[in-house]
Image (cartoon, rainbow, N blue to C red; front, side, top):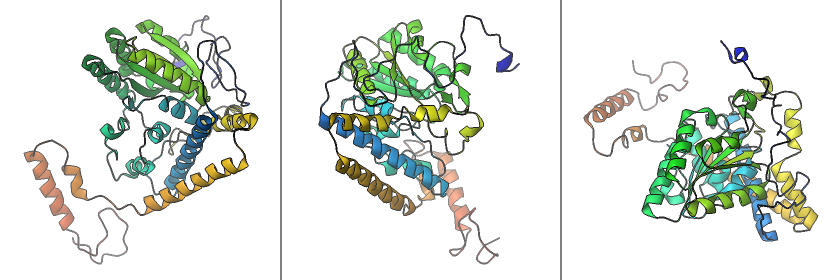
Length: 391
């Protein structure tokens, strides 16, 4: 039996991939045309300087993301998972965090990493295969990227439960995607967080596609409604509106810190790029869908807002673009000049204390590497002829 063979009830209306149901309310403070609108429950007092800072975040995150994708195509990175189109959801939610709050990402939260002060070189180093994460999570209160889909929601919930028991006045944000919401780990995290009143905000970036599966193949009811079944609050926000994402996440975090339990935020957005650089979205996306979402671009609407309010001129925009190009040049040079790690490092942090099996494997691996002459290519590297290769 396939998914197509499963019965569908007449009461469940068909959902067009990439579109919001008109009956579903969605918090929005900035329209795609850059017009500021009011919301009865979520207000946001923000200055011109703060909007310009948000715009800078959006542009620089997009620029280093595109540079990483290019570097992967040139063979400098093994893989890259682009955040193109999701910058507003990430930057808006991350700028709502206080220094003491803690974020648990998936593998695509480059904008959150940027806002928490993680060097983009550290992110790219992981995708180049030269480090195991690249940063100390305790330094930035930003956990290492989690490749196992949905697992970080349980980690975040446990951490939040610990904060509550310690009496800390901080909160946690757990990032995940619409595809991860189908994992049992996420449901377990929802239940634990609700029962224990954990100060955690579940921030789901619903980018419409779980790799190649649209949302109507993943769930029949809007995702944010799932929170009600576990006994806590859920809401949908325009994930391409950085102001709305900032306001909603700030509200959810304040609620969590006040001991009012978890919140599920569904940021309704769109993945403009492939799921990863090994994916080809043209094989599954319907014609015209991406073009329709380009009209809701999160960067363009903030630019339009700044121009509409006369809070920025062309010199400002050119300056941000130049800063982005300088960042790209720096990353390009840094990645290409990044040394390979010592092969022995893989054995150094397996256990906290020495372990006889690891010591044995370490010795065997050292002997294997010693079997190659100094002028021979590294194991697995291409070479011509047999000069210098021991047999």
